[in-house]
Length: 327
Image (cartoon, rainbow, N blue to C red; front, top):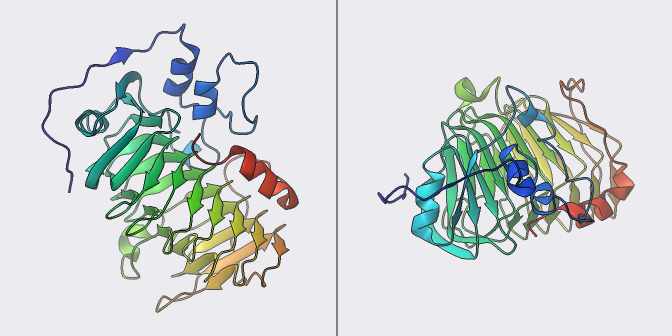
């Protein structure tokens, strides 16, 4: 499945303790902290976090790579993301095709305006991966696919356009994932959590994901569509002009919908979807602005094993507008 070419090892630069931005990136800081370290003002305080909020902070957390390499071509990019142990700093627009393997212990971070077009990233049987500050567009499969038991993956501050299949799918027993501060623009079948109804043997007990402070702007459905996952936390997201539905819970999944702002969303939630059996869903402290009813079913344990403070839902559009997406 990988299209990574057999090319020489990339030249890499060992991070120095005196480089505030590089050290921040190595330790797993968000791209805002890395790019604005030492500056008088950062664009917003909230994204300057020292690690992921939510499920990716468990099971050892996420730190990503430790040695930096700059890439500006497809060959350099594909070689670097498949090596492992690197902070891959992307500049410019890079065109790839198909799904391209990302190794464990890797950070992929874009400079301002960095874009990946044509293809996507496949995180399969890997762990400790950060993907941040990139624009994805016109992918020919998925933009990002997290699968086959991958763990501790943090996808934050990216912007997704429109492509062939999902923007960001998590499936096949993957676990401890955080998807935060991303912008999803206009894609139809946006995000799956769990790929099929007959995969409970691999998925049950896994698929623990936190989705927080994302903007779903005109994304028609699957924001996300959940199977089997338990205590899936959908927190402080802004849903705007979503056509079909916002969040679907199926196959006995347990979803917590908390502090979100639904703007012009006729059907914020679905209980069951297509041929899939219904799941469970609880909601708290959401805002409905020109939107329909939030459907709930069953019970879900809301005593999550990580600390967080929910932003007031009526402030979410402004907070997300200031902090989400690639810069």
